Length: 586
Image 1: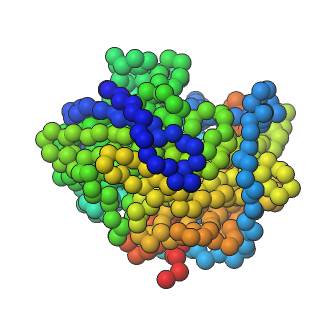
Image 2 (image 1 turned 135 degrees about the horizontal axis):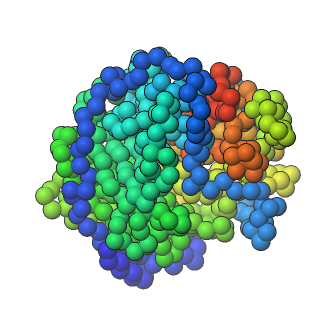
């Protein structure tokens, strides 16, 4: 891959401050043939009948936390990192309202995930949840469990479907033989209104039958054959080991997905399989027409992006809601955003544009990726979040008893990105400071006005702000908006005043809602295995690496986030998800 750097002399408005407009060009390669159809699977037929009683056949390995995601100790335990600067502008807390304009229902829980496929699953924390909606269906994916609902919340599958069964691969673990199969993680689901198809995507590091990691990895993508998410899927598989590339053999981590009119895009962070060190970012552009037709070998274009400036990390592609226009100039443009990956504070974001995406529909695609840095707002790597004290059934069963855990506050990478009405709507995590000077985990949102003219990429800010609740924490904000820019941001609200709760705040192009709305209040503290020393938690529990939100053709915003429900739990974890529908005012 070739990279070209150029300094562009662009007149800067006041909103651009002193940011130098250095624009980089990346040239990728056509790797069609590396993603191939490996199976055709019926979702309904693959659901295992019945459920295994909890505890049966558990004589072997049990938990499988996704350890690659950073789970950090409090700043006070980080030495020099405790001096990380914080955003400077004044911040105003949002009040919390007990009244909500949303409706919601209980989504997948740890018990659902653990008992799927007759119990041939691991206990997994955190709950990585994703949502898609269209044609009167809601598709939820959490870790390696999948469910389809009506918009009223009725479940449409005969049981919880595992992604192992959907991908046509062996179960995560056979509880009778204790043989390990494939452990897929980092769930992403998607509905494309343009081609009327459903997507389920995960990545996996390969392992042997005993669960030991191997120096190889795969990406799995299931694409429905029709507009029915409970029906038949074409399953595509790609070896992502990238053997021969400097720093590899590798695995892909934390996949992000998006789409424009012509392509479906997957962006991942690449790590080496030996030492789990970051290598580079990889962006895959796949022809949507190929996937809609179910061809055996879809058109595939690849960009591998080395780390130079620090913005080459978790490069998030945009999605466009039904009814909104794609960016069709320059042969079709797909936008991406990224934040600075280091532990330091920053106020710029990496703006990326993949051009000539229409060529994905040809026999010889020819795409170019451009990147520049634009000003946004100050953001900082957040600390951990505290919890409201409460009963700890699992922690109390340990010897010595476990203490109330912190919640992993995550980091400042992009959480969601939407292109609608000529605007880019983005959310990210950040450290915030409330009116009492208390450091908290919070969020930020920015609305950009992206332009691409005469080969020059820019994006002035239309509006930006922080998401914060006084004395409490706001985790993993995700945004979705309709074609008019009206929507909501979903997140977990937690702290001394709230058990981890599912919450949201409305937003449009000119204002943020007057108050945080609690869609479903948490019932208890997080009391899962990842927060206790027995499983290396060091007092910091894993929390959903992301929330998820999408818009539908009827103007609804569908969201899902992690919380602690008043619902049956397993001995090892009590997390659940809340599926939320919000309808912006006419």
